[in-house]
Length: 331
Image 1 (cartoon, helix red, strand yellow):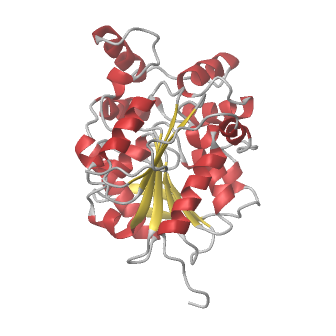
Image 2 (cartoon, helix red, strand yellow; image 1 turned 135 degrees about the vertical axis):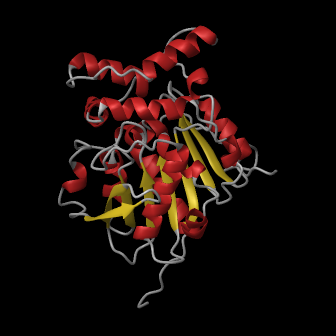
């Protein structure tokens, strides 16, 4: 099985100061309200119905005739997480964002599984794209797992022209997490599972809460406005939803699904990611049938679309330009 990289000599890993400029140049507004500013206009809102009847809150930005991008957020997040990408892309792309089950404005569901994630992505693709219409599908964390879970599904194969996997993994999430500064082994795995699967409420966003979230999910150089935006998004997720999906993630095994992801797929990881360390990205890139590049970003944590918004957006835009058919003028 061949794996194609961004360069002819192997994996490309970002170095120097360019990535830090990317990390500092993006989100300049609170992420939970930037979608709704006049910069990109009001979204077209709709409800997609999944295979089991679950209703999913969907927002569509930009011209319907523009090249399409579909964005799937991660565990404990919402459509607001993609604020920088929506703002940057909506002028000349059709940008689709949706809330995963129990997150944002999508009601909670007792069905929490990778099959449900795949069902939901299929429902969103079918509800927002015309038959045969192609899109770049990007996912962060659990959103990346959603793409992997859906890789063999008919609607995904009909509509996905390329994919972006940001800060994600396909298996061994708890065992390989470095959130707890302990040596790898059974004790760290057990304690990490208890921490990530806690039912405890997160409470209000306080200075202490921001420091904890920054340590666990973001790089040391993350700007305060980025930390605050992510904290308010994560703290808004109901604790029962957070706990239910943590159980799914602790048992995750999508290694087989990576090998079914046959569209050109870019992989992005932060070297300071404690939730899904770069070992996951390397493993995925090696297993992909058509890897469109692995980028490891020095000093960036788990929240790559917020911490390195320009780079994530540019990766999406490049894949659209290369792989999504452009509508001919006047068509």
